[in-house]
Image 1 (spheres, rainbow, N blue to C red):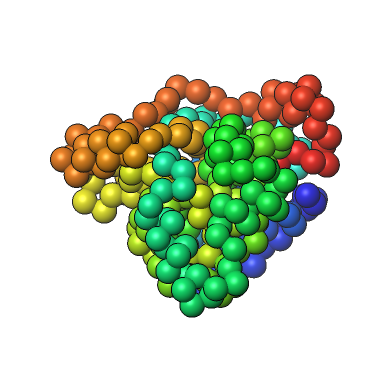
Image 2 (image 1 turned 60 degrees about the horizontal axis):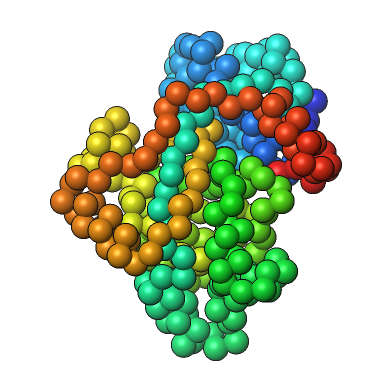
Length: 292
């Protein structure tokens, strides 16, 4: 990870600024992004309309009739300087438990459909397990479900989340499909690079598929209780824990969703301390270089 001493600002058309804070894709840099987003929100800068955190950067949408690119850039640099570039501090962080049926029939069918035209493609769970030194599929499922994940960013598709494993000992890495799939089941759980994602709808995709959740993470109709205030389940800075389930539990949850009765399991009252997290990383013998 490389943190820049000062943010690098680039115009994103005439109504947006792209703010780059470093070069890399890991938890420490992403935490700095979220901390700056929180400070900018608290500052209530006139003319700022939206703040979109990304993995190593953020986008600020603004009204150019109320504030100029130059003046907004000055405010961003001032607030960044006040915060400093150290990876320290804390943020509110909700914790979601997401049920997942590993190696389920729908993602298995999706992989099989892709392999019908790309026969050299190794089935996703077998490829990911082999690349990460795991002996079989049950070991892969245990590894994937053994940590909390940090919601680093939302994007590409409404509600789609980029998740970073918080326990570096459980990190799973995998290449993306080449070429990508033309379709992916709604609720599929995938791994690409060092990220895990949950597909919010049936979309094209390139992450290696490990399973599927029946619990929606996007609800355009806002039928379920978790979506009363937002179409997307997660916010950047939330945490996710995957809970393995069998097919009977999967079918029951899907039925509850269809009936509009399903309630997501969520803890709202927690605060995430990056200082305590880094202390814990040291206690389990993970060097600073290897931290997520």
